[in-house]
Image (cartoon, rainbow, N blue to C red; front, side):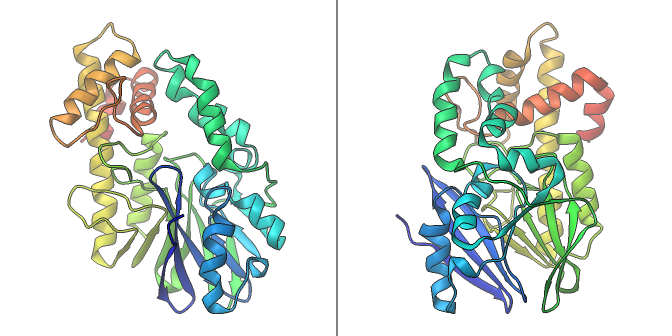
Length: 329
């Protein structure tokens, strides 16, 4: 087991870095108000392996955590909910659009991840993929509070977090915005170029992502705290961006998403009679001429490719060329 890393970058906020699986790393954030809250809980064994040791230097235990603030429903952010609830009785908060995804790992797999295999004609891979997700997703854990956009979560001692709905990665992705301090705890709301080298960002709803980025650019954010060390085109590989790098990160993330959409549109135009899989392969080839791409045995990027390219494919099929071109410029 790799040791956790932690970073107190504000008197009331500690970042906790946690490892999982083969190369996975998720950043959590402990918020110290009158209530002790943690932004995301990692995978199924993260609380015992990483959160508990990070609390010890401060005289705290898992049982002291009152609230789990999930940024969205995916297993690497909610898989630890069950273990943490068992240890502390903490209440689980998540946006209403991701509540079922967070609570039910089986539903999460079918809704979020099965398409990685079915869309490219490999249903025989589903059982192994489902079993792999269950390892990290933990037990089904009820959601106590289903959040809505604009809701205020008051932790006391001046920590008032506004729920800012930022769909794109998932429909229920949110940022917890501490306006007084200019902080936004974003999870995977704006995933840059993805966290894995050679892969693509996991974006399921590209049109919504563009709207979310535009909304975030209007806020006074001086510290943008992410759920992973997301890659970009030019910025340092950081999980927290400060000051002027916040807007630069948001704008580069938009540029990256549009690059992927433009490639999908161009590939579809060149292959008018082809299905999604062939177009996705051609789009991946186009993108690899602009940035390094590590391809898997299917000729797609090792991470994120099916989701983001299919998101643009759906947009193209439902709303036509103008919709994709509008996002690509």
